[in-house]
Image 1 (cartoon, one colour):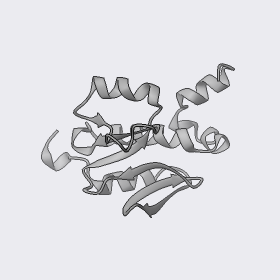
Image 2: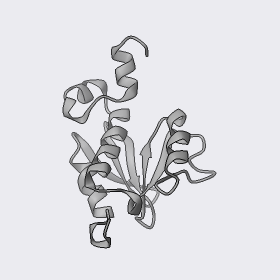
Image 3: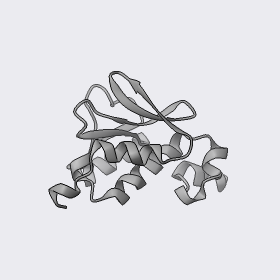
Length: 133
């Protein structure tokens, strides 16, 4: 990926706000993106990383597979279903959109998520639909 193709904070904002019923609201001195009042993404203080929802069970596997891309902020993210993503490590806008859509699905009300099948179905939603959740 060339430097001029790097994902920026503006790209994160644009992609997050393109998701249905998303609003931006500052919290802790940084932009957060919410659906139904629940945070699904945030930009870090220096705008080089974003935080997203991620089930704790999946988080360790993602971080181990791509530590240059995914990480947690020790002492802050440890007990939450949350992880950080380095914007410079993202391949392209498509990967950014996929990560944000996955995070959005984890907090969006079921009816809203179901009304937007183009955004896919989260693993939790798929399990619930199959009667496993």
